[in-house]
Image (cartoon, rainbow, N blue to C red; front, side):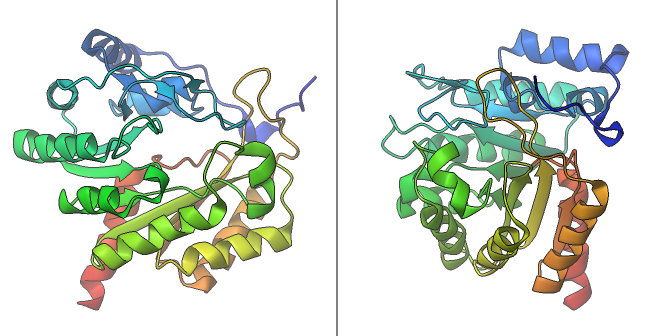
Length: 292
């Protein structure tokens, strides 16, 4: 038996016309979303607001992290028409700020960076949309990171996911912790003006001291935006929740992160990488404008 959900982690079952409209539109488009594939608890709220995080490059990942519910195996061929499909859905939803992520594609020479670039450019040229991307590590390929930066997305995110000490247990097929930190550093080296974002989960057995080290490590890369959320076990066989962290503790971590120097921090039980993405982007742009 899993741990019983505390009151602060209970949400309404999604329903309503707007939710169903978004759900049906995405199904008809043939596009995948991380909202569904990763069983995000915010799906009801986001779909009801006619927004979603698009999952490109298929819905089968070449890695098998023990906290993630996305399927692992042999991915399908890249859909060369996917940029236009995403554009069509974005137009129908009326989105002006779009979040794009992907499964990890170790089978592709560039990890899928070129496809990301096409999607970003297609959305900007076809819909005038601002685009945020949440990228995999591309196995540390600097050329792939340059391809992402060349498309000039508004925000480039890459998550550390958890404290270093849990990597060997929960991310056995992922590249090492230091490589993910290097991705964030390299993005700033390639384009010092790019806005970078990272995030991690709590409730997997980390200690307060380990969290403090993680905050310092992420900040050392020049990362601008930080998100911190509660891990929720998506299905049987995945990593168990060790602790349901209180909202008060999330606030303490937010304040610690802000003292470290992060420009903007979202920290709370239901916070996810792309949740409230537009609001976070606006906050940081306002801060940059105020300093100009």
